[in-house]
Length: 370
Image 1 (cartoon, helix red, strand yellow):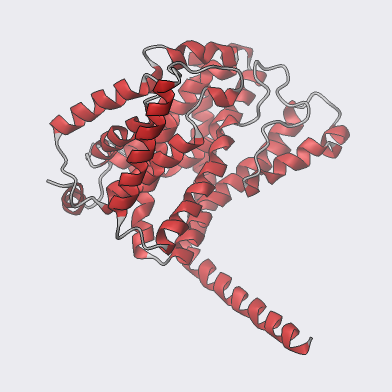
Image 2 (tube, helix red, strand yellow):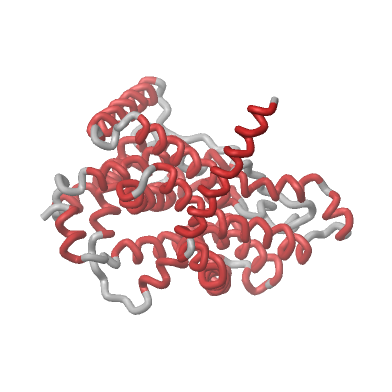
């Protein structure tokens, strides 16, 4: 049975909801080390035998994203698709940036409030809604092991790049020739691996936070492979033996930075295989809706919990308390803002188009008069 047949038969596969919420909580759990002990505490995990477990978290999220939104791309023209994606991403992002500046900033800054508001870092942080990322606010979390307000924001510019790539793929009609995209990605990854091996770059070096995480290329590649798997869903077989083989290959390839690029192919199969399963867990779909909010708000909540509660400065206690508050925050964000916007996105899109037509007409009048 193929991926496409499985999706048609099962209609809604709860495996994707289970994966989204599991990955969101896994990332919070992983970040407890960074929040409680600082960046040096992560080094062993990135260089040791457990490296694939942490390295695969964000790429897995992007595989899911690429696969799931490919359906929207298939059903809509590119303008409608991009508007709908903006309606899904920006409300929660706007809330996160605003809450961080006003709520967490005011509560946890160690400088006078007036100085806090006047500081250029305050206004620079507001630019996070545009994809221009800043990680710190003046005087906020400066007594924590790491001073970053929200480390998860590093994926926002990557997501925007993914949508630019989608526009390019659609413009050149490559969805109908997706095998060309797949072959090019594989060839580039293979050549990059060869260059790494020739240069003996087997082990990553660490210094900046960005040295610990998957590269932008890895994450974007994961997204594109998710897209490829959706387009080729009627040709890819769902099989437990292929799943086990892919899991082993993904783990082996992610052990070294030089082969991590190629790991995204078997990792994509693993994620999609798990996604088309149908575990019966109460409220799973609703929790799946909260996954983006949990992912987005989680880190800043962890920092606040560490700063506010001395008893929550160990990984387990920080995870439990932060996870609870993350679910509450994500659920409020979903029900009060995100879901309402998504329900009315067609009306908003019509209004957006009519506004563009009006502005175009006014511009035409100005051009003629001049």
